[in-house]
Image (cartoon, rainbow, N blue to C red):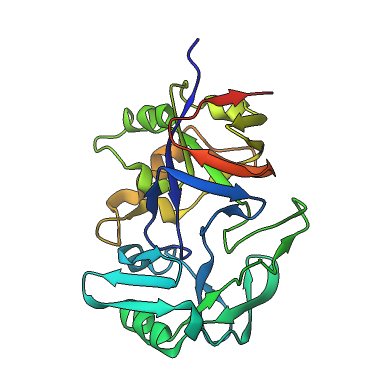
Length: 265
């Protein structure tokens, strides 16, 4: 029996924008270092995602020690310096969690307004997230509900066998990708160790229209695929469609591509 391997690591500096591939990242209870530390919100505080604004996936955000660089193929590149953040509390929410983010700069707000066509604020979590999820007993980022999400390469390969056109891992926006495991093996995992990091597999990840966005174009794919196909065989008793597993960090440390994934339970 082969040992699963951590084959890819992705972080998403801004919720719903394009991901960054990394070979090595630290992880703590809030997730990967730099992951979803920023989010867009409307003036009334409602959060904005690619579910309604798929063009967000055309935005590439790169973190540095001094701030954030924003790129979009139809806009000029913008460098947003952390030292210039306004840091004014701004009431917002992610699903059922209400909390305050921090404002960044008017220039960043205006840049994103041009990118998606409506007024928004670019919010920052700060050095330590103010959002605490009672359901998992952890502080989390601007992520939907969990610090990390994992998918096996074999699970995507099995899905693609059912489709006329293959779909990309980027559509599913995992943080951790695992190779050398059977399709949907992650459904049966409960406790993992990757290097020095220990992870609890807490809950399968329910999927929505987000996975039907083509990351390359920022447009919805035809036929509601691959959500339609997944609904045919990955629907739970609650009627939701599941693909991938949500993780909680029990012991932090550094994750590195190529590390063995030990299945402890």
